[in-house]
Length: 212
Image (cartoon, rainbow, N blue to C red; front, side, top):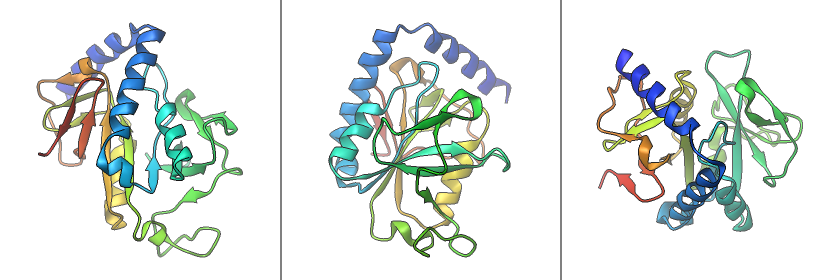
């Protein structure tokens, strides 16, 4: 939609003008705000991401999660599959990563354990299927270009997170999606479409938006 494109271009320009110190300070504030959330404290599985082009940096959060014994996964775009990405477990933020699609650092498929969501067609190394998350509490940290107070999100336009989050829902995994961004990334209204996935929370350096 044209309105989404206008919002995306405006916010990306603002984000591109941020200083490295602003990115560092605001990212730390976002991470600490999430670390104080009850859903994060209860989570045993954290799906995060590697930042690019002044996105909020989640390394502090991932380090905290690993220190607390949570399982941490980051995404890898599947180049041979339409708008699909897989998540691989990492043992540390300093794990060996490779530059993947769109220049984003991704896990090497040989070094991580893949998170599988399709119970009938794939299994992990133990022969277990998507029941990996049974009785586990899962949070998904979702980057975005813009958000609104109704917890709608605009991404970069590829639809990768919408596809993944919808697949996660279909796998019957219980999870919370936490959108993260800077305060200027919150806009008055985003024109939502049927396939768009609302966030459960949106966290900025100074605020949190939720259903309640």
